[in-house]
Structure formats: C-alpha cells, structure tokens
Image (cartoon, rainbow, N blue to C red; front, side):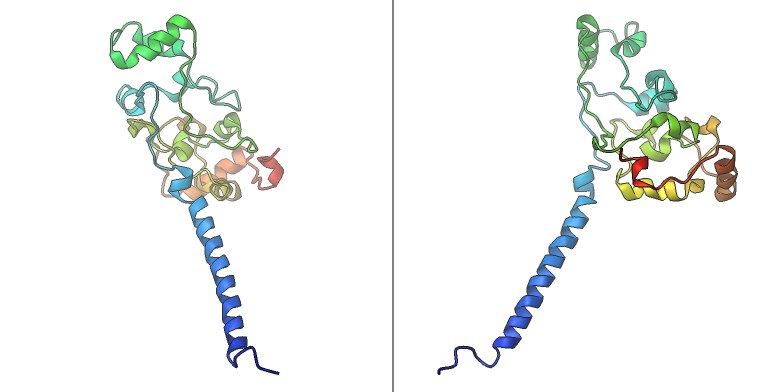
Length: 216
C-alpha cells in the first residue's frame, strides 16, 4: 500500500494545532484588550451636545455648585439632567439672544425637553445609586473627574466593573469628609488611608462586592 503521508505529517499536524490554539488565544486577548480600551469605553472623548454647555465656565469660572443643576443627586439614585427652567433662571436675564442658546429658549417656550447626549451611560443591568455614594463620602470628582475643567463634558473613568470593584474592595483610599464631596478641587491628604479608615468606620461603609450589589 502506498504511503499517503510523509514522515513529517505528524509534526506538521501538531504545529498546525498549536498554531490554531495560539491564534484563538491571540484573538481572545485582542478582544479583551479592545473591550477595555478607550475606543470601546469612549473614556476621555468629549461628547457633542445640542447646546455646548461648559462645566469649565459654569463650575470652574462662575463657581456653581453641582447641586444647583443636579438637584436630586443627594436624595435619589438618579442624578437628574437639569430642567430647562434651571438654565433659564439665569439665561432669561443674560445672553438672551445668543444663537447657541436658542435650543434652550425653544425648549422653554414649547415645554419639549432638550435631547442631551448622555455621557455616563451604564448598562441597564447595572444598578447605581448616587445618593448612597454621596452619603458615604465619595466625591463627584472621584468618578466624574475634574468636570470644572471640561469645556465639553467627557467620561473621565472607564466605568468598567473592575474600576468599581477597586473602590468597593478598599473604599478607604477614596472616601472623603462629607463636607468635601462637592469640592472639585479636593486633594486627598498625605494620610488618606488613615483618614479613610476612620471615615469608613464613622460612615458605616461596608465593602460590598457581591454580584447582587450592582446587578439586580
């Protein structure tokens, strides 16, 4: 009977299998890298809005407190998008004919909400409560970055599960006094871990890492 396979056939087969396994592994690693990259998370990418609202101007320049516009952040799981009426509290008196603010005036006249582009958009299967984090001493800038320096708002952090768990596993490294939660310029002290451990005890913070904490 003639020999169909050369003497090297077994070696070639083994090398082929190793190549396939290696290629699959490389593709898996590439997929993992892509899903955590800025390309996928859009971290650091300024978002275009119907009105070019500048936190840099309103917060950093004029000194507006976060709670003036985001009125429910201390009491609700949802940090509300400001109502048009809040904008018009000032802009009915100033910049009243500025072209870039026409969508605001039109919204106020018609009662139709401005279709803002959401920047921090968690998946529907993730539960996040703003009020709890505020009460436990987690500052706005910890999650949202220095929005007081953003001409257009962007997502400062990845919002990936690992990022959340880093805080949940060791909240002492991030917690701050409650009266500093809305201070965008807050700088952690050199003894942050000692202060953090004290505040974790005082605020009764529990390190919650079970799936049901966020996935309900």
